[in-house]
Image (tube, rainbow, N blue to C red; front, side):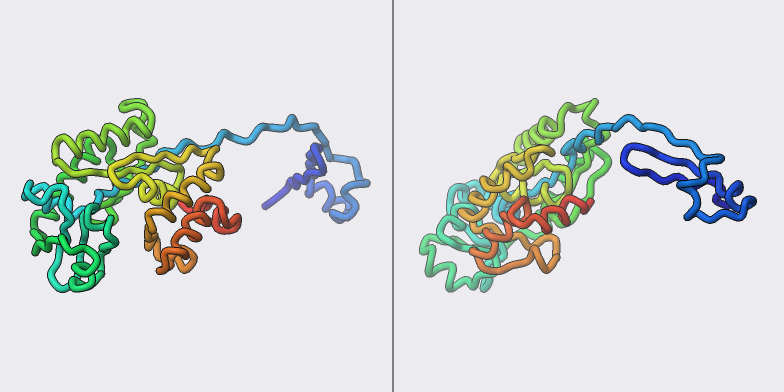
Length: 272
């Protein structure tokens, strides 16, 4: 049973004894003029807590299938290659520079890149390499959320006292994956998964981008330009406001994700 009522006007907080009001046959409307068994006090304004540290990492292997093929066959390195047969499943960055993209038909890909070399793919090896990379993630934090064969989210909030700042952890992970496994890895660091995902796309290929908690809006215009230049597609997560198909839409959406759309930015910041 509730016996006390607290309400606030300005910086004054008033506490009312509801039992006393009931015994005297008074209502809450009488409370402001009925001074018995009430008390008021001044509260010192409290500063809001500091912004939560950016401790969410999104780690994404670059052109994963194609990078594995180039790792298995050194003769394919620095050459435009595509994994697949009638349809491009993945393309190396050398092939992407010509406009070759995943999902493109093989005949169209050969039209725009005459030197394109197709490989059938070693799908069992892809899983092995993906598992090896995730094992490196677990060496730094147990809080790993794998979302596909070649990408994962890491929460490093509980290990900064062991391995340093989140950006230092991200850099150490990238070095280990490159040195021990031989694959390029891009990492985004931010306060939320969604912003970390955007940051990792900006970091590609083989880079690291951190979005500081107090610099999320200031970083937006630069990120928007980079994503527009790359023509990056952002098909994760599957939210109607984040899914688009045309490059111009992608550029507009990329800016909205960080700051271009105030409502969307607020929505993103409320997500985990």
